[in-house]
Image 1 (cartoon, rainbow, N blue to C red):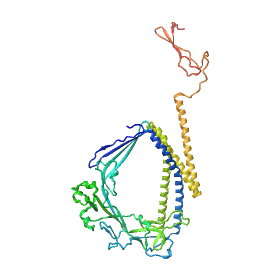
Image 2: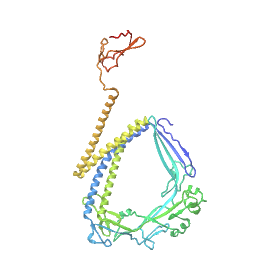
Image 3: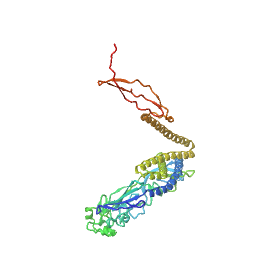
Image 4: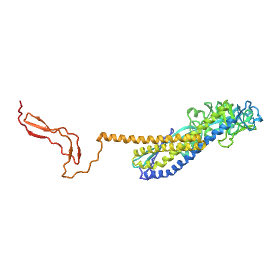
Length: 521
């Protein structure tokens, strides 16, 4: 172990070879460094703590404005029953309709006017979108960290790096690995095939063109099964294998792994793939699959603007844009109900985020106390749990009050109720804490009475020549006759005494000569 204030790193390699291995790094941090770090964290904690208040306040105002904007839009919406024609009477109005969404692009190179993958030539004539999904078999680094406390307030952090081969749809840069095992854990520098989405340049909803900002909300894609005959590129067709509805491109069992290490991906993939796929995947192998988004019925709510639809904006300009879009045949009421549920979900999500930020900020402010208590590890852990509880409790109260004040500003009648409820909750918490403290004091008194009686303060000690006063009633001694001719006079059972001054001497046992017993007649 390193000296206090220093750092020691220990590297341990296990396994290795083709199946991957493990690399471990151990770091030590002393109490001084931890205190310095935690004190710096106080500044960050204060920023987070005070930053949570405006976030919570803004969120409540945003929720109210969005609610009012949706209500305003719902009151003005008009349902269109024939969306295959553009009615000029609805120009500038908020309209609602359900209709089939179709690919309106007829200028594609494909004769059917659909979508085509430019590399493979895979066609999806009627699809709204065509998705190519490409993966490569690569080395992956997994990192796990375990932190333990040491006596004296230090900390030991052990980080383990393990390596395995997995299919990934993105390129992993192996040069950033903590351990490359002499070049063993090395991935190609490029992917010959990458994932890509092709979208029709014109998507129609009846007589209207789908607004551009809604294209990313088209999310009902499904698998597109392809065969080798669907590949129009002869060179790719000769290298590909059919695999699970898609294609597989391997390096070949006789290919040199140095091609991968030297990043000559093109040369490696160009080798025969049949034997490679049958013998197991190798680093650099790729597989490609396709998905398509077919036509479907959708429901939309937006402002008619020429041959398309735009967003509705409230009179105040607040509450965000109202442009609703969902798959399925839905009424206007269902569309606005769904939008209100989304607003509630966003509101609660931001509330929880604000509460978490405030709690974490408070914990960072309190953390130096825990770090200092870590001189004895288990003590620091106990204090740390208490600090977390305090941070949660304080943040809960302050979050409730902040939300109440925000509602009071936006909707006074609702805000007053929320504020009263918040104060009642705070009062109940305070009452519970008070009762808990009172109950604890009573339990302490009962314990003292059980083990030692009620404690009474003794008066000042008397002078040396003063005989202690004993307030007790003594019974006369009882005399027992013994065969040997002696009797024993024993003192009666000691009665409780209340003493003033020093304690008396222990009662002695007296032995006397026995007198003949003469019965009286």
